[in-house]
Image (cartoon, rainbow, N blue to C red):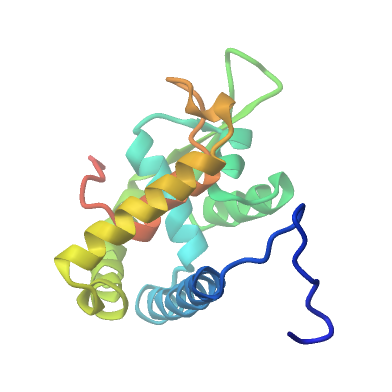
Length: 187
C-alpha cells in the first residue's frame, strides 16, 4: 500500500479494491460525459448544460419555482443560481417575480422563448445522451446501473426531502436533465 494511504483498522476498514475502482470510474464517466454534453449544447444551441438544466427543471414543474428551491434542486449555491437565473432572464428565457404569498421570496418561471429553447435543445441533448452514454450499455447493464444508483440516491437523500411535496433532493432532481426525459411538458 502506498505511504499516503491510511491503514485499515477495525474502526476504519479498507474499501475493497473493486468498490473503490467503481467509485473512481463513476466519477470519471460522469465528468467526461457531462463535459461533452455541455460542449455539444454550447456549440449547437448556444446553451450551457447548467442553463439547460434550469430550463428543464422549470418545464417539468409547470409552475413557478421559488429561487431557493431551484438552487437546491440544481446543486448550486444560492448566489450561483441567482447569477444564472439573472443571465437567463436577460436572455428572455425566464422571468422572476415577487412571491405574492411571501413578499421576501422570488419565483422563477419559463417564458415562451424559454420553452422554444428547450424544444430546440432537447434533440441535441437526447442525441448526446444516446451517443455518449446509453449506446454503451446493454438493457441489462442499464437496469443494473439504475438499480445501483437508485440505492445510492435513496441512502443519501435527506429524510426531509423525501416527504411528499418536499423539494427534491439534489441527486434525485439532477437526474431529470441528465436523462433528458421526454416527459417534459412545456406548452
